[in-house]
Figure (cartoon, helix red, strand yellow):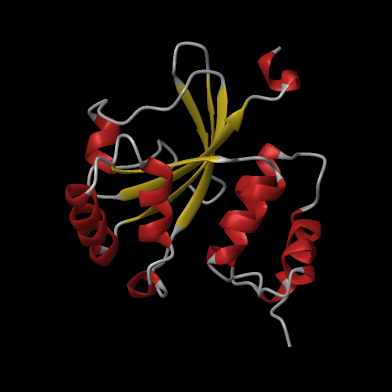
Length: 171
C-alpha cells in the first residue's frame, strides 16, 4: 500500500509546500496523488525528481552551501528554483569525492543526480524550499517551515532544480 499525503509528518511536507509555491493553483495533495499514481510513496526520494520533471524544473545543479554563499555557484537570472538542502556528512563527502573526479562545472546535472540517487544517500533527510531569482540574480526564498528561510547555509549541500520564471511571476 502506497503512503499517502495525509500520512506525512509535518517535516515531510516541505517538498509539496515548495512545489505549491511554484504552482499556486494546485493543491499539494493533488501533487502527492500524482506521485502515488506513478507507484511511488509520497515520501520517496524520487518524488522530487518526478515533480521537477512534471513542472519543468529541468535544470539541475549541486553545490556546497559555502560555494553558493561565496558566489562560486550561482543561479541564472529570471528563474524559479526548488532547492533541496541537507547538512548530512554523507552527501557532503560524496559531493566532494565526485566533484574532484569530473569537471563538475561542465557536468552539474549528472553530478547532482549521481549524488542524490546514490544508495549511500537513501536515508538522508533533505529539506525543500522554493526561490525566485530576479533579473539581478537576487533570490527571494520561501520556506514554509522556516528551517532555511534565508536559503542554503555555509555547512550544507544543496541541489537546485530550476526553470525559467513563468510570465505571471515576471510581471
